[in-house]
Image (tube, rainbow, N blue to C red; front, side, top):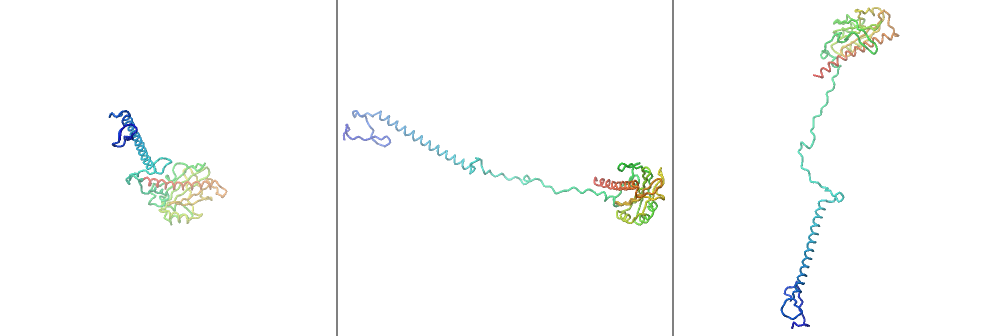
Length: 292
Protein backbone atom coordinates (compact mmCIF):
# COMPACT_ATOMS: atom_id res chain seq x y z
CA UNK A 1 0.00 0.00 0.00
CA UNK A 2 1.36 3.32 -1.06
CA UNK A 3 1.14 6.52 0.96
CA UNK A 4 0.37 8.70 -2.03
CA UNK A 5 -2.77 10.60 -2.65
CA UNK A 6 -5.87 8.65 -3.49
CA UNK A 7 -4.93 5.62 -1.41
CA UNK A 8 -6.75 4.63 1.78
CA UNK A 9 -5.56 6.44 4.91
CA UNK A 10 -5.71 5.33 8.52
CA UNK A 11 -7.71 7.78 10.74
CA UNK A 12 -5.96 8.92 13.91
CA UNK A 13 -7.96 8.86 17.09
CA UNK A 14 -6.27 10.74 19.95
CA UNK A 15 -8.16 8.63 22.51
CA UNK A 16 -7.33 5.30 20.78
CA UNK A 17 -3.97 3.80 21.69
CA UNK A 18 -1.47 3.10 18.84
CA UNK A 19 -3.64 4.83 16.27
CA UNK A 20 -1.78 6.33 13.32
CA UNK A 21 -1.07 10.03 13.59
CA UNK A 22 -1.80 12.17 10.60
CA UNK A 23 0.91 13.82 8.71
CA UNK A 24 0.86 16.81 6.53
CA UNK A 25 -0.71 16.63 3.14
CA UNK A 26 2.59 17.56 1.67
CA UNK A 27 5.31 15.17 0.85
CA UNK A 28 6.04 12.30 3.12
CA UNK A 29 9.12 13.73 4.68
CA UNK A 30 8.60 12.23 8.17
CA UNK A 31 7.88 15.57 9.79
CA UNK A 32 4.89 15.64 12.27
CA UNK A 33 1.92 17.81 11.43
CA UNK A 34 2.23 20.25 14.32
CA UNK A 35 -1.04 22.00 13.60
CA UNK A 36 -2.92 18.72 13.80
CA UNK A 37 -1.18 17.83 17.04
CA UNK A 38 -2.07 21.20 18.57
CA UNK A 39 -5.69 20.76 17.51
CA UNK A 40 -5.81 17.30 19.02
CA UNK A 41 -4.31 18.55 22.28
CA UNK A 42 -6.90 21.32 22.46
CA UNK A 43 -9.66 18.78 21.88
CA UNK A 44 -8.36 16.64 24.75
CA UNK A 45 -8.19 19.62 27.12
CA UNK A 46 -11.79 20.60 26.29
CA UNK A 47 -13.01 17.10 27.04
CA UNK A 48 -11.14 17.04 30.34
CA UNK A 49 -12.64 20.36 31.32
CA UNK A 50 -16.09 19.06 30.47
CA UNK A 51 -15.46 15.98 32.57
CA UNK A 52 -14.26 18.08 35.54
CA UNK A 53 -17.24 20.41 35.25
CA UNK A 54 -19.65 17.51 34.95
CA UNK A 55 -18.08 15.69 37.92
CA UNK A 56 -18.19 18.87 40.06
CA UNK A 57 -21.84 19.38 39.23
CA UNK A 58 -22.63 15.79 40.20
CA UNK A 59 -20.69 16.17 43.45
CA UNK A 60 -22.54 19.41 44.23
CA UNK A 61 -25.87 17.75 43.54
CA UNK A 62 -24.90 14.82 45.78
CA UNK A 63 -23.82 17.11 48.64
CA UNK A 64 -26.97 19.22 48.29
CA UNK A 65 -29.11 16.09 48.40
CA UNK A 66 -27.34 14.88 51.54
CA UNK A 67 -27.82 18.26 53.25
CA UNK A 68 -31.47 18.35 52.23
CA UNK A 69 -31.99 14.87 53.63
CA UNK A 70 -30.29 15.88 56.87
CA UNK A 71 -32.56 18.95 57.19
CA UNK A 72 -35.67 16.90 56.47
CA UNK A 73 -34.55 14.32 58.99
CA UNK A 74 -33.97 16.99 61.62
CA UNK A 75 -37.25 18.78 60.91
CA UNK A 76 -39.35 15.64 60.92
CA UNK A 77 -42.94 16.28 59.87
CA UNK A 78 -43.11 19.83 61.20
CA UNK A 79 -43.09 21.46 57.76
CA UNK A 80 -45.10 24.53 58.80
CA UNK A 81 -43.00 25.88 61.64
CA UNK A 82 -39.62 24.40 60.77
CA UNK A 83 -39.04 23.81 64.49
CA UNK A 84 -38.10 20.43 65.96
CA UNK A 85 -41.05 18.55 67.39
CA UNK A 86 -39.01 16.23 69.55
CA UNK A 87 -36.72 17.83 72.07
CA UNK A 88 -34.00 15.91 73.87
CA UNK A 89 -35.10 14.47 77.15
CA UNK A 90 -34.32 16.58 80.21
CA UNK A 91 -32.04 15.07 82.78
CA UNK A 92 -33.86 13.79 85.83
CA UNK A 93 -34.06 16.34 88.64
CA UNK A 94 -33.22 15.46 92.23
CA UNK A 95 -36.29 14.29 94.08
CA UNK A 96 -36.06 17.13 96.58
CA UNK A 97 -36.27 19.86 93.91
CA UNK A 98 -39.12 18.38 91.89
CA UNK A 99 -41.87 19.08 94.43
CA UNK A 100 -42.66 21.85 96.89
CA UNK A 101 -41.94 21.17 100.57
CA UNK A 102 -44.88 19.72 102.42
CA UNK A 103 -45.99 20.61 105.93
CA UNK A 104 -48.18 18.82 108.38
CA UNK A 105 -51.72 20.25 108.41
CA UNK A 106 -52.19 22.72 111.21
CA UNK A 107 -55.10 24.76 112.45
CA UNK A 108 -55.41 27.56 114.95
CA UNK A 109 -56.73 26.41 118.32
CA UNK A 110 -60.34 27.40 118.94
CA UNK A 111 -60.75 30.57 121.01
CA UNK A 112 -61.22 30.03 124.69
CA UNK A 113 -64.80 30.38 125.87
CA UNK A 114 -65.15 33.11 128.55
CA UNK A 115 -68.06 31.22 130.07
CA UNK A 116 -65.75 28.30 130.92
CA UNK A 117 -63.83 30.58 133.29
CA UNK A 118 -66.88 31.88 135.13
CA UNK A 119 -68.61 28.51 135.45
CA UNK A 120 -66.38 26.96 138.11
CA UNK A 121 -64.58 28.26 141.18
CA UNK A 122 -61.52 26.25 140.06
CA UNK A 123 -61.04 28.38 136.93
CA UNK A 124 -62.66 31.62 138.08
CA UNK A 125 -59.71 32.77 140.16
CA UNK A 126 -59.46 36.50 139.35
CA UNK A 127 -59.92 38.94 142.26
CA UNK A 128 -63.60 39.48 143.07
CA UNK A 129 -65.23 42.34 145.01
CA UNK A 130 -68.12 44.85 144.73
CA UNK A 131 -65.65 47.37 143.28
CA UNK A 132 -64.48 44.94 140.54
CA UNK A 133 -68.05 44.12 139.54
CA UNK A 134 -69.31 47.70 139.93
CA UNK A 135 -66.33 50.00 139.31
CA UNK A 136 -66.29 53.80 139.35
CA UNK A 137 -68.82 56.25 140.70
CA UNK A 138 -71.38 56.02 137.93
CA UNK A 139 -72.33 54.06 134.80
CA UNK A 140 -74.00 54.92 131.52
CA UNK A 141 -76.55 52.77 129.75
CA UNK A 142 -77.74 54.28 126.50
CA UNK A 143 -78.45 57.92 127.24
CA UNK A 144 -79.04 57.42 130.96
CA UNK A 145 -76.37 58.04 133.59
CA UNK A 146 -76.74 56.20 136.89
CA UNK A 147 -74.96 57.40 139.99
CA UNK A 148 -73.41 54.76 142.19
CA UNK A 149 -74.47 54.70 145.83
CA UNK A 150 -73.52 52.32 148.68
CA UNK A 151 -72.09 48.79 148.22
CA UNK A 152 -72.09 45.74 150.53
CA UNK A 153 -70.44 42.32 150.66
CA UNK A 154 -71.34 39.34 152.87
CA UNK A 155 -70.71 35.61 153.08
CA UNK A 156 -74.04 35.12 154.90
CA UNK A 157 -76.16 35.18 151.77
CA UNK A 158 -79.50 34.69 153.60
CA UNK A 159 -79.10 37.90 155.61
CA UNK A 160 -79.18 40.14 152.54
CA UNK A 161 -82.29 38.72 150.87
CA UNK A 162 -85.95 38.18 151.71
CA UNK A 163 -89.08 36.23 150.89
CA UNK A 164 -88.29 32.77 149.47
CA UNK A 165 -84.76 33.66 148.44
CA UNK A 166 -82.88 32.93 151.71
CA UNK A 167 -83.83 29.28 151.57
CA UNK A 168 -83.01 29.00 147.86
CA UNK A 169 -79.54 30.50 148.25
CA UNK A 170 -78.66 28.51 151.33
CA UNK A 171 -79.97 25.25 149.88
CA UNK A 172 -77.80 25.57 146.77
CA UNK A 173 -74.54 26.52 148.45
CA UNK A 174 -74.32 30.31 148.06
CA UNK A 175 -70.90 31.38 149.35
CA UNK A 176 -71.10 35.14 148.94
CA UNK A 177 -73.52 37.94 148.12
CA UNK A 178 -72.47 41.41 146.91
CA UNK A 179 -74.78 44.40 146.44
CA UNK A 180 -74.64 47.88 144.94
CA UNK A 181 -77.27 50.64 144.59
CA UNK A 182 -77.65 53.12 141.71
CA UNK A 183 -79.98 56.09 141.40
CA UNK A 184 -81.44 58.11 138.56
CA UNK A 185 -83.38 61.09 139.81
CA UNK A 186 -86.23 59.77 141.95
CA UNK A 187 -85.66 56.11 141.02
CA UNK A 188 -83.30 53.71 142.83
CA UNK A 189 -82.25 50.13 142.12
CA UNK A 190 -80.23 47.63 144.14
CA UNK A 191 -78.51 44.74 142.32
CA UNK A 192 -77.36 41.69 144.28
CA UNK A 193 -74.95 39.02 142.97
CA UNK A 194 -74.95 35.61 144.65
CA UNK A 195 -71.80 33.51 144.11
CA UNK A 196 -71.75 29.68 143.89
CA UNK A 197 -68.98 27.17 143.26
CA UNK A 198 -70.47 25.88 140.01
CA UNK A 199 -72.72 27.04 137.20
CA UNK A 200 -75.05 24.12 137.91
CA UNK A 201 -75.70 25.40 141.45
CA UNK A 202 -76.44 28.92 140.21
CA UNK A 203 -78.79 27.64 137.51
CA UNK A 204 -80.64 25.45 139.99
CA UNK A 205 -81.03 28.33 142.44
CA UNK A 206 -82.44 30.61 139.77
CA UNK A 207 -84.90 27.90 138.69
CA UNK A 208 -86.22 27.64 142.26
CA UNK A 209 -86.98 31.35 142.64
CA UNK A 210 -90.38 33.05 142.24
CA UNK A 211 -91.94 36.49 142.49
CA UNK A 212 -91.41 36.47 146.26
CA UNK A 213 -87.63 35.92 145.88
CA UNK A 214 -86.19 39.39 146.44
CA UNK A 215 -82.90 41.01 147.36
CA UNK A 216 -82.98 43.62 150.11
CA UNK A 217 -82.62 47.21 148.93
CA UNK A 218 -79.38 48.89 150.04
CA UNK A 219 -79.54 52.54 151.09
CA UNK A 220 -77.32 55.05 152.82
CA UNK A 221 -74.49 57.24 151.57
CA UNK A 222 -76.97 59.85 150.37
CA UNK A 223 -79.58 57.35 149.21
CA UNK A 224 -82.92 57.38 151.08
CA UNK A 225 -84.58 54.08 152.07
CA UNK A 226 -86.75 52.62 149.32
CA UNK A 227 -88.75 49.45 148.82
CA UNK A 228 -89.15 49.03 152.58
CA UNK A 229 -92.95 48.82 152.46
CA UNK A 230 -93.96 49.86 148.97
CA UNK A 231 -94.46 47.62 145.98
CA UNK A 232 -91.27 47.36 143.89
CA UNK A 233 -90.25 45.63 140.73
CA UNK A 234 -87.73 42.69 140.89
CA UNK A 235 -85.78 40.55 138.39
CA UNK A 236 -83.74 37.32 138.69
CA UNK A 237 -81.21 35.73 136.34
CA UNK A 238 -78.14 33.47 136.33
CA UNK A 239 -74.95 33.37 134.26
CA UNK A 240 -72.00 31.10 134.91
CA UNK A 241 -71.64 30.46 138.62
CA UNK A 242 -73.43 33.69 139.46
CA UNK A 243 -77.12 34.40 140.13
CA UNK A 244 -78.06 38.07 140.10
CA UNK A 245 -81.16 39.92 141.26
CA UNK A 246 -82.50 43.48 141.10
CA UNK A 247 -85.13 45.43 143.03
CA UNK A 248 -86.30 48.83 141.76
CA UNK A 249 -88.51 51.45 143.45
CA UNK A 250 -89.16 55.12 143.99
CA UNK A 251 -87.28 57.13 146.59
CA UNK A 252 -90.51 58.90 147.60
CA UNK A 253 -92.08 55.57 148.67
CA UNK A 254 -94.54 55.37 145.80
CA UNK A 255 -95.61 51.92 144.62
CA UNK A 256 -94.33 50.72 141.26
CA UNK A 257 -97.07 49.79 138.81
CA UNK A 258 -97.01 48.28 135.34
CA UNK A 259 -97.41 51.78 133.89
CA UNK A 260 -94.16 52.97 135.43
CA UNK A 261 -91.89 52.26 132.47
CA UNK A 262 -89.10 54.28 134.07
CA UNK A 263 -88.78 51.81 136.93
CA UNK A 264 -88.84 48.87 134.51
CA UNK A 265 -86.14 50.32 132.27
CA UNK A 266 -83.95 51.13 135.30
CA UNK A 267 -84.11 47.55 136.55
CA UNK A 268 -83.45 46.15 133.07
CA UNK A 269 -80.44 48.44 132.57
CA UNK A 270 -78.79 47.31 135.80
CA UNK A 271 -79.52 43.63 135.08
CA UNK A 272 -77.91 44.02 131.63
CA UNK A 273 -74.91 45.86 133.08
CA UNK A 274 -74.37 43.10 135.67
CA UNK A 275 -74.49 40.42 132.97
CA UNK A 276 -71.88 42.32 130.94
CA UNK A 277 -69.60 42.70 133.93
CA UNK A 278 -69.71 38.97 134.68
CA UNK A 279 -69.01 38.21 131.03
CA UNK A 280 -66.10 40.69 130.93
CA UNK A 281 -64.65 38.85 133.90
CA UNK A 282 -64.71 35.65 131.88
CA UNK A 283 -63.23 37.36 128.80
CA UNK A 284 -60.34 38.82 130.79
CA UNK A 285 -59.42 35.44 132.23
CA UNK A 286 -59.78 33.66 128.87
CA UNK A 287 -57.51 36.25 127.23
CA UNK A 288 -54.91 35.88 129.97
CA UNK A 289 -54.95 32.08 129.64
CA UNK A 290 -54.59 32.24 125.84
CA UNK A 291 -51.55 34.50 126.16
CA UNK A 292 -49.67 32.02 128.35
